[in-house]
Image (cartoon, rainbow, N blue to C red; front, side, top):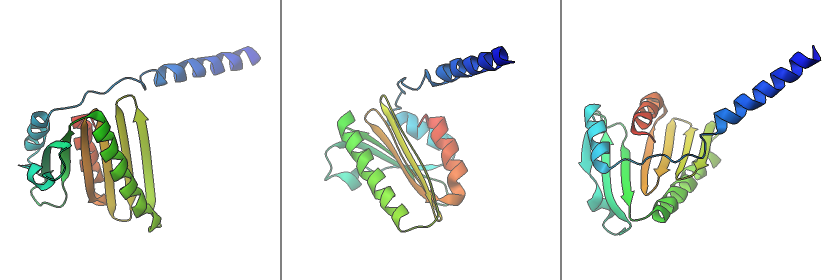
Length: 159
């Protein structure tokens, strides 16, 4: 019995090691053209939002997409460097974290690996996401009822 128990523990440890072995791998960022193509294929309205950020030279491209009812937007940014994207990610994560301080209902997750970081927050009636790969960033502030839709889209984009 003791041998079986030890064998199961070793097998579990080995399986755990293999399940985490891909955690440090890099993710591949997408281009603005790929973002637009995916969003249009999902019948989202897509528009260039760069003019809104003219005073932010580090933002080289910005595309805003929304479902036809315009109930929320999924924003895609290309920045001039990875460090600019990291700074924008940190700033938006901090803004999201402030929202949880005034709320009783919340669920959050955070991950940061290699060239990738993602933060999600479900607070009251909002689902908020900021996700970065390399010098690109996706920002979402949607109604919580759209969480599954947003999650599916982000998964199809690789974010």
